Image (tube, rainbow, N blue to C red; front, side, top):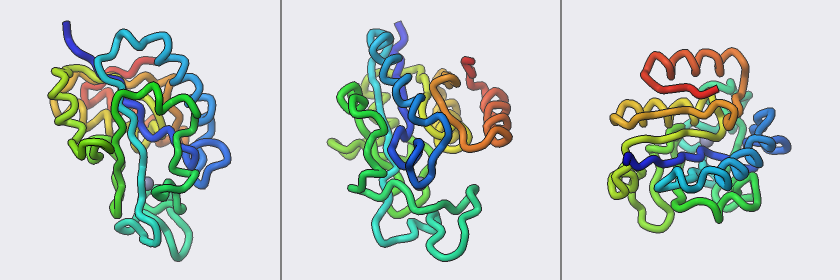
Length: 193
Ligand SMILES: [Zn+2]
């Protein structure tokens, strides 16, 4: 039987309602992901959660618009600064449901979970997945059109059988979310609606 991992991308306070880079529907998605894990735990060899974990007092490689207005495509309001409430998980019970946690975005823009490193071991996500003989991943989280997109594209490129569970994601904007879904399908990702 193929081992499958669930990748829970950036379900963090700054990406849900009330956060500095709030995505509409994020809070509901956070709760739905926790419920989904409770129903589906047996289906997954690993459940890996990522957090955007940016460096304080830095523009993080041009990722933060510290002067002038962000363009919400390549520059963003300050978000998910390491150790701040905005960087915490957006559901109080999520962290205890994860088997592994990775952090990404330390002093750089990092949209894909594959750019992250494990909090405890410092291993890459690829190393974690290989160690568990994972050949398939399901991707959920925030935001559909940015970090979920980038994570799923990297997963497919690395040869993993990749699905995005669309109802368990939230997108920044409808147009870019539609474009991301088309791009994912073109890349061979199964988009489950
Ligand atoms: Zn970021």
